[in-house]
Length: 254
Image 1: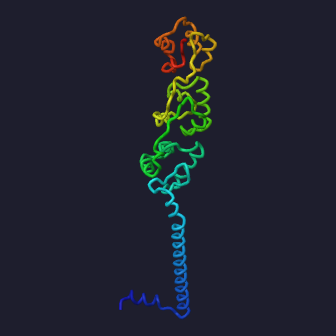
Image 2 (image 1 turned 135 degrees about the vertical axis):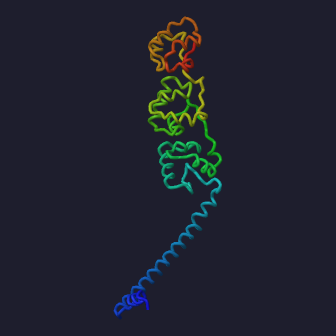
Image 3 (image 1 turned 120 degrees about the horizontal axis):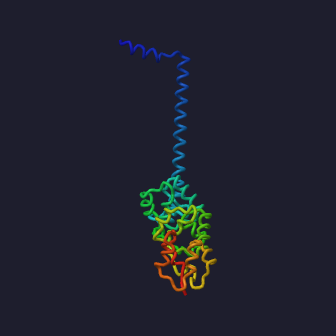
């Protein structure tokens, strides 16, 4: 007989007290296993009951091909991390206007937009446009997904200069995120007829100098015109100005 077999038999050679202890231990393990099995079975049954009573009826109420609502609470299939970020952004800036607004969330990738686009209502894929010179402070904040303080500054600047002539002017607003213009360029409408214009025929130097887009030197030169100036003449005056591109929209002669 080999030595390892002898050692193996000696290891399991219990005295009467040890046999009782081993029996008790085995029975204890058996009962623990049965209790664990029973708890799991009960949990699974509860889960199936919840699926039948709660989850399945919910999906019956919605079209499963368009079940996501980023302005509501139904966001099945989205990771909790993104749900929290979406809800926080919505609480801060208001409702999302379309799927493209979600691109402003930090960490969102193109595959997220493509995946979610297949699960939302078709109307959420169409992005509405805004009239930049008519939009309110609240609408401005919701459209660009920016703080209300920044939106208030932009609206105040718009009212002071008499309205925006081009979207690039928003870059003059403090803390305005320039990249938001790139993503929304095709969604912004500007009615140049709504811009408040200065009549150079009657305007005097003090009035011209008060305008935010006109310096004192430029105001002095404009006040010297005795007849309607041509566009090249206006551009010559504002040659060194950062407003040269659009200043002619604010001037008129009549």
